[in-house]
Length: 187
Image (cartoon, rainbow, N blue to C red; front, side, top):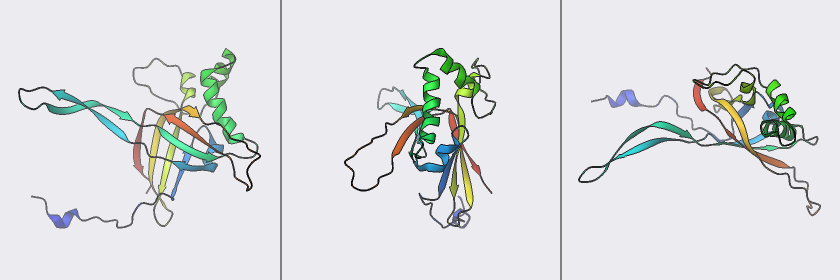
């Protein structure tokens, strides 16, 4: 039996939702204005094993990660919105194939491994890595959550209105998919 005295926590401070920063390798202007981000959940699949009595469940072998969702304040020249817009439309090339070629020449400079995928180095430029940095109560970075091979799947609209009586800054949201994320200690 385990000794309860060795199972006591060594850190008694609680995590706070306001001490963090999300750093994108590919879209640095969005990093500065990011106001909300989530740490996506993860689900492990399961298999049902039939028996004459109650069915049993056994562990699966495939993880499903939820999406990474962010909200950011849009700068007055729309630079951060446009860097995301350029990325997502470059992947989808709505006008011409040259948009695709331009997107393939950009990227964050990281060399990626896709396991058995036969993607080229240029195709890896469609992806980027990002790091969610979590700070402790003294604003010291404690945990880096690294998102690997991320790409945008949606970018919200911007709502302009002459009906507003107070200044409200435009905000946009974006959704990302990624291969996986991992935790690393910052200290």
